[in-house]
Length: 120
Image 1 (cartoon, one colour):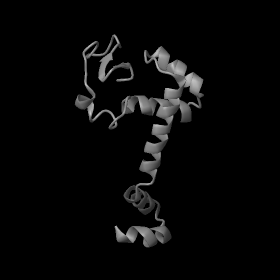
Image 2 (cartoon, helix red, strand yellow; image 1 turned 30 degrees about the horizontal axis):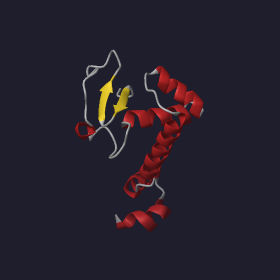
Image 3 (cartoon, one colour; image 1 turned 60 degrees about the vertical axis):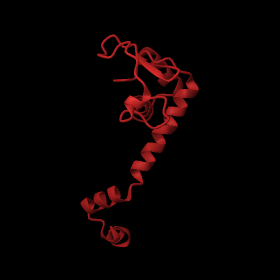
Image 4 (cartoon, helix red, strand yellow; image 1 turned 180 degrees about the horizontal axis):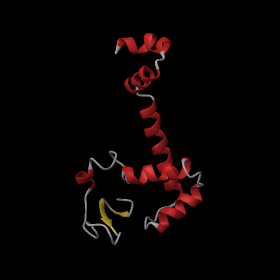
């Protein structure tokens, strides 16, 4: 898990003792598949923050403490920012019309499908 990366200008270094890339410098360009564009943190950190908040019902200070325990030193405001990113990604996923149509087909919701999904 890349949640142990720290920002040093634009170069990231993992400080997790069990990581195969420990202390190896990594540029964000090399991690395009792992992080959002212009994102300071990878999707693993964003998902962890969302999971801690919504599945485990943890508060921002508790999430901040958990990230610190995992070696990721950030401000509480950064936790809030990552939670917003999680919510944005979740909203985009939930609003995906193709995915919604597939789910409704599975549930046999004929009336909604006939209005919106018939054009797909």
